[in-house]
Amino acid sequence: MLDIGAPEILVLAVIAVIVFGPEKLPQFARKAAKALRYVRQMAGSAQTQLKSELGTDFDDLDFRDLNPKTFVAKHLLGDIEPLANDMKDELKGLGSLGKDTVGEATAAINEAKSSARVTTRTSVSTRAGVTATMVPALEPVTAGTPFDPDAT
Image 1 (tube, helix red, strand yellow):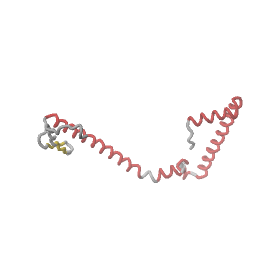
Image 2 (cartoon, one colour):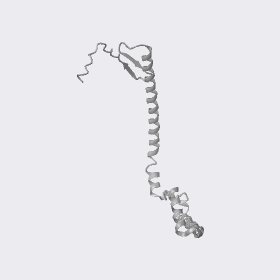
Image 3 (tube, one colour):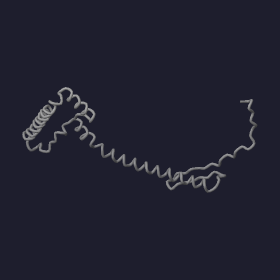
C-alpha cells in the first residue's frame, strides 16, 4: 500500500511541528485519526453491504483477491510454485553432493601426497566415482646457467 518507513515518518513529524506548531499539533492529530477511522469504517461497511447484496453464493469472497497483483500471483503462479519448490530442493541436494565429492577427492589426494612421493602416475578414486590422476613432479634443474649481471 504505502511504502513509508521510519525516516519518512520522522521527517513528516518534524514538518508537522513546524507547520502547525506544538500547540495545535495534538488537536490536528486527533482530527486526522478521527478522519482515518471514518474512512476505514465506510470501507468496511461498503464491503459488508456488497457481500450481503451478492448473496450466499459469494460468502467465501475475499476482497484482497480482487487486487490484480494478488490475482496474478494466486491464479497464474500458483501452479508453478510447487514445481519451483521441487526444483529448489533438488538443486540443494546436488549442491551438497558436490561439496561431499570435492571433500572426498581432496582428502584422497592429500592422503596420497602424504603417503609417499609420487614417482609414477597414480589414480585416486572416491566413493562417488570421481577419479583424480596425480602426476610426478619434475625434478629441479641442479646445473643452471651462470648469472650475468651485465646481460640484464
